[in-house]
Amino acid sequence: MTLSINANNNEVTGAWDFKLVGEIDLSNAHYFKQRLEAALSEKKQNIIVDLANLNYIDSTGLGVIISVYGSIKKDGYSIKLLNPRDNVKKLLNISGLDRILC
Image (cartoon, rainbow, N blue to C red; front, side, top):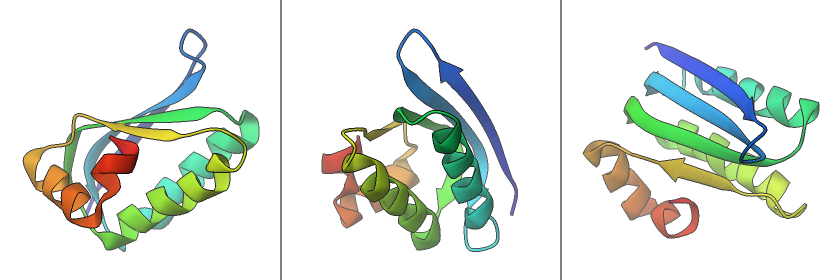
């Protein structure tokens, strides 16, 4: 499965903007985690993830989000997930992450 990630340090909002296109699963979740960690090692700040073009995410991808959220929350930062498609929104609802990250 393919995943394209566009990451941008938004000076106006003071957050990393991530735009995801494709799918996140076991085969590429490590790439997503590397991109998040690389951004945070460059500058630790809030993360905004646009899911409008993410067709699928499995539990491995959710685990990456939870892991990174846990590591930045202790420093007062957060992750916000925007524009999830219905199938992704359903998984976020089932996991309870919609109440925390959306």
